[in-house]
Amino acid sequence: MSKIRRNSYLLAVGFLLLIPDLGQAYTANKVWFEFLANGRYRVNVSYTVPEIKELRESHVEFLKKSEAESLYWDLVKGADFFPPRASERRFSQQPLTPEPW
Image (tube, rainbow, N blue to C red; front, side, top):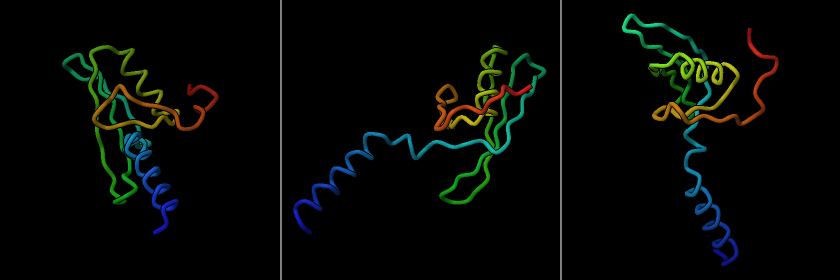
């Protein structure tokens, strides 16, 4: 292996180690909102793990309705999310417009 090729390979691996979360994000297939009897709000998410082609479901419970609605509408608009961290989400593309009704 040439020295230039080896250096470019090491640079690419180093870059991927700096941004490990990019491969861990998922996009929701289905999102639904529930009000629970104990006064909490639950946002349920159905998503596909592309690497193993497996359908999974997860949910996040909130005490504040505004926080639950914020997550719900971000997922409906197409935000990528990170399953163990409910508060971390980002848009890989521009959010869908117009606003959902």
